[in-house]
Image (tube, rainbow, N blue to C red; front, top):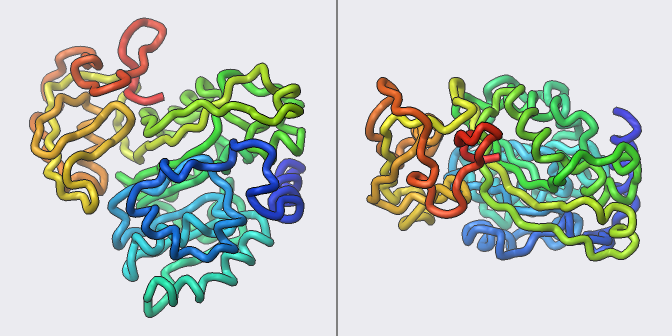
Length: 354
């Protein structure tokens, strides 16, 4: 624990009484961001949990039945409980948070939620601990199917350690999906030490360029944006302090897959979605520019083909072609359905996301 950890614990454990005490909307999420299956479960979650929940997105993916999910910075446990319902009695949802008051609230509601969900046994576990060191919470190597986090990683003073731990605990082919606040530049040192800015998820916001490089170092060489939206600062005093920075709320998806490339490469591959993911009979969105319509072949780069075939989504996709023959850089305009891919300084298509 360092001084930043102590400040965050104080802020979320003792200073904030509920989400209504926040000065900005940086730690709040529009209900429209939730999928229908998440919206259906939220009314079943105890109100005291909802009132003490903070988040800037909805990083709860589909296809959770029977899986093991880990929520980093779970707070009062809202997303853990939602995920536990979607995972079903054969699944397991684990929450880790360093704030005693939040974990105590989550644990106090555990039996109530089990009864509401109609499970014979609770499929939820909460640990008081640090997301920078999940070994102390008993999270083993290659043991987790899905890692989520909702507007918490920005609070960590050791972000690279967080992502190293995520890579360690994910199973091969496992999925990371998280929502957080990002900045268009490196934040000044004083901002990360300002308790108000830090607690509003602004002071520790990651610069998108540094984030991309960090993820490459730990293994996630291709991260995908699921959604990006501007984050206006509507509090006059906070804007006076930090209004020179442009912030965005982003939900990002990545997979623990060895051998992904740092640019979009063309191997002549095509992906076809069979429409079988529960709740998604017509299309599946891998990210904000890869929508796969059921039954319709779509050209994909090598990385996208690997993500679809080597993850738990693989049984719902048919990948035509392999990587035996390379045809050069992938034509992102041809493979993209909306926003297109990022382009690096040389003009070549970079890996499809950040």
